[in-house]
Image 1 (tube, each protein chain N blue to C red):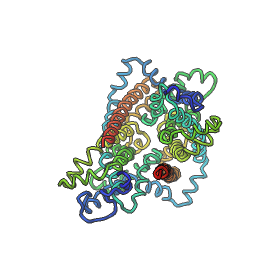
Image 2 (image 1 turned 90 degrees about the vertical axis):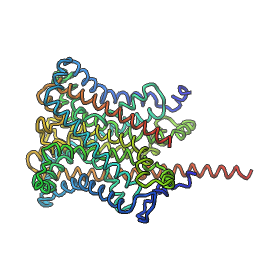
Image 3 (image 1 turned 120 degrees about the vertical axis):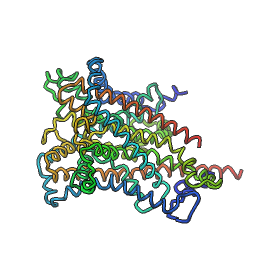
Image 4 (image 1 turned 180 degrees about the vertical axis):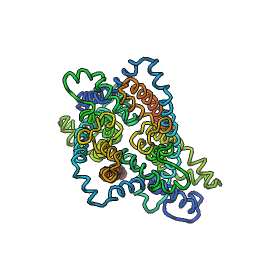
Amino acid sequence: MKTKKRHILPGFRTSLSWSLLWLTLIVLLPLGALIAKTASGGWEHFWGTISDPEVVASFRVSFGISLLAALINGFFGLLAAWIFVRYEFPGRRLMEAATDLPFALPTAVAGIALCALYSQGEWIGKLLDPLGIKVAFTPVGVLIAMTFIGFPFVVRSVQPVIQELSADVEEAAACLGASRWQTLRRVVFPPLLPSLLAGVIMAYGRAVGEYGSIIFISGNIPFKTEITPLMIISKLEQNDYTGAAAIGFTMLAASLVIVLIGNQLQSWGNRFRKAL
Amino acid sequence: MASFIDFRNPPGSDRRADCSVRANSEPCWLRRVIIGIVLAFFILFLGLPLVVVFEGALAKGFSTFLSTFSDPNILHSIFVTLLVAVIAVPSNALFGIAAAWVITRYSFTGRQLLLALIDLPLWVSPVIGGLIYVLLYGRRGYFGPWLQAHDIRIIFALPGIILATTFVTFPFVARSLIPLMQAQGFEEEEAALTLGAGGFQILRRITLPKIRWGFFYGLILCNARAMGEFGAVSVVSAKISGQTNTMPLEIERLYNDYLFASGFALAAALSFLALVTLALKTLAEWENRRQFEAGQQAVLETTIHITSIEEPA
């Protein structure tokens, strides 16, 4: 059946060959260069590069603080998705549209805006100074930038699932004597969990690789606020292509794992949704 | 049963600000608290950064703001950004249509792999998007010696910026077309084929009108990313103002040189673009949903029509 259906519409060859040509030029060939360059350095060099204390410290910032940012986004994203679907209030549509701002706003713009907001003596920095809290050029600043950049993922992942929840199970729970909190915790929340986790993982993946919105507010202090993408750039500036490739390859592998976990969670969530 | 439920306003989830105590919705005070928390988050993380940009741009008066855009270096950065977008967006749009066509119309081995590879630039760090081209075309890259011998510059020049931008914007059009074209099916295309239409005729007169809002959605997202890309481009650009700086790179230079008013003025221009993008994107989403619902309605009406014809007999 399938083989017969394949060629009913014209253009299979043209569209496939154009797609493959473009894919090869833009994605496959350059990625091949990354893998080849990493391999050309040999294992010793690879391990030596990524176990360098400064690089390890940057992994801690990029992979550690991102996780915290993703969890913060999980909390606020869930609340935002919930009120967008369930509550009616003035400005709801505007807020819904504004959710995607971190996708649309160029990262360099977000970077200088956040830096200006939280620097000492500036807008929010001024309010935090008397409390002795410093944000700009500290890990807290990195956390804020990573939270900004990952926010839309959770809302976009959870919102459609909340939309699909049928009201009758909640009514049934209420009829059977469950309090609202019990209903939320034991009836509403479980089906949301896979998509919530998927959203958190996607926000995490985005924050791990983020560069533009972080480097201004972070101040790029070695061992403290230097992120891994910046290490790649500094290796390139030293003309150490193999070192840059080794760090890039490590990030690529880590991102691949993150995205595979995210996809797995999503298909788990889809199974869940079908069962409802 | 399903038809009794209004999905936009399910009975159990009373959206209206009805504050009577109900067992299946949160009490009114809690609603207000939750809305307040989310609103505070939005203002802090999404609202204030925008306000800061526009305030910074206009801090020294409107004339200073305007004079930013007569600086030749800044004008050149705008030109570079537009040029890059003009090349990267259409080429990715053509790729997007071809890829969406081949993925949704045929089944072949490697289809899943092709889908996964299209997604790749979405989850890879943009800095890696620049790095891979340096490894290929840089001075010490694989093609470096050959390029140098022929006096061709790709890295630290415009071609590198275009390539890196094309990489990061690669998935947008394809990703917005694939689910749409999958949902729409291709009965109309097959009908056109039986009536004697050729491949390009089908594409131009049947498919493109069908997918126009999804296509438009992909294009504006692709364009916003192309004009705003920073990480990938900062790796492959020599960052020379007036030569290889795009708008985001020029913003970085101005900011690092403490030329805050100009930096924020240029940032305001890009923020304005982002706001327009969001507005158009929301419009495209509404149109898409409207078309989809109209399609469903039409199917429903046809079904009712058919059953009512059959019933008297």
